[in-house]
Length: 123
Image (cartoon, rainbow, N blue to C red; front, side):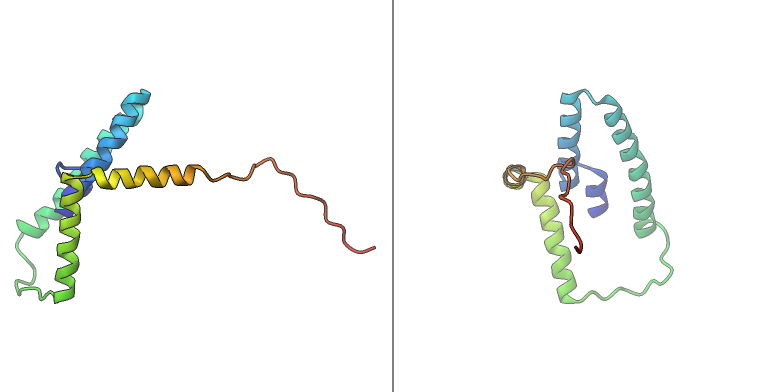
């Protein structure tokens, strides 16, 4: 599921991020960026599917079951839930990102052309 999210498969969280990037690129007419992005998605999907093939289709090297501790299972389930929730209902998270962006856009950045004052040493 996480690999599919990284590839941008809907309705997972990775799809929402890619969707926003592509919509913004279309609005700005950045068709080269869109083309490179789509090529990247195809290449990454190929590599992710190789991993999935090794996980589920190929014969295991060691067929003994893997023991997963309770805390590790909890982390996996929280990650799965987050991936699905953000993919299915992203609005609260995108609102939070917009608010954070607006908050940081109010900071004044130092000018790159500032000249340091001379330092007098001795005498």
